[in-house]
Length: 358
Image (tube, rainbow, N blue to C red; front, side, top):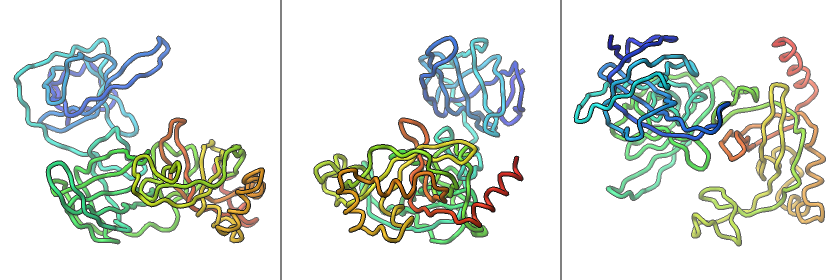
């Protein structure tokens, strides 16, 4: 019996489908049997779309191919249905066949946005909108960029030629998810469903426990201890365009962009639920202690032992950190933009919170 995607249920097996490939990617993985390659992406039919994972796949399969799949299974993954293709599944190419796919998009909170879902629906309030001209391969226009915020955090949003009103609630349907400089962003244009909606403002800071951090996200707060600080740290010049280190006063990616002087520390932060590696720069250090203005940080960074004085002030202290979580070669990394030491009353409140959860 052939199923439609709209009819699929969790924990189903022996599923037969005829589908069209919307996107397909491959990735290396280490399993108990050794290194292997698996495939993932989106497939669809006339009833909707669904993400898939394939542990075996015909190498000639391409985007827009129509496939007949026999003996698949369906499970919940990250609260979403996902189709699984394994060694028991028959994957049959149907060359020359066409299929109209009904586009459906998962409505996600910002904390759940990831490149696993290349097109999504998302709601939030637009903040800090700026604009600049752009020139692409096919056309030129105006890029409006800023942040999209909901009660779980915020994410960079790019809008090509569609002006967005600041401090206004929107629902975007068919927004594209991508990753740039280790951060997630969503992009919209005149083909995206864009609807103004009423959204209540976020009620105060968005706090996370470290174990809850699963994908890049911005505009969040974490309470925790700085338990270790790296030997590296001090003054550095960064590119204003991408914030990368500017060797010899020039960014390798943006050689004409201006640079600015920054100060940085590497650290490990722990909160009782897990730990995360991170960095903090000039703005975070100045927010931690008002005496650390730029000239004072210049003095400290120029000493023989570098930022030792700063490290002593921070190491082992319980702090509140505001920042963003990004992808890095070593996994998730916390980049702190502001931080402050917690007072005794705040520590007592935090202790009660964790005792209640235990």
